[in-house]
Length: 274
Image (cartoon, rainbow, N blue to C red):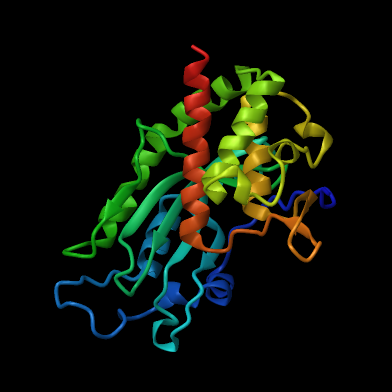
């Protein structure tokens, strides 16, 4: 069963501070969570956001991790996706993004990654490649300007992203190759095919007419969208006879990790065709 086609929510306006605060209050922490080591250097995420705005990186998406302990609320991990100001009004099929992750409870370092936003399905990918690994900054002697300066490394890598995507587009998959890609995707999410709530073939179901092509780029987006957003089911049922359905991934770590693994899978698939 396939959900109704997703209508693009291409954002042409950057998020304001008020909108950021509404979605992720932890961004606006004015001090770290109590009890951390004296060596922990607190650098407010708001300073990074302000610095990136000055460099024409504008926030377009934000989320924060769920927490069970009330003492951790307001300091938890948060993720912000930025897009270049000059791309805010473009209607390109995809735009490169800067993905920033941080927390104020020592749960993670500042992490900066390359992201891709596919307008057609509002799919936010995270690039993982040997030529551009995530940039990490430990909370020890850290200065906000160091993180902001690192955004130039993202810009330098952007042309390579376009080359990689074109390479995926040029890689036509046979039915067997597409099925193998979907199977590997299910294994990445569920550990093995037996644990998967759907058949691998169902994972290749397009949500819209534009996702019909059989190239690797389209397959990557189909598989990624289904595995991360969920809502897909077929004939498999649980012990109570209910249809099993892919559930959406909610955690920041699980979303980013699966995204990166799927990108690596796509690169491996393309490399095996050479």
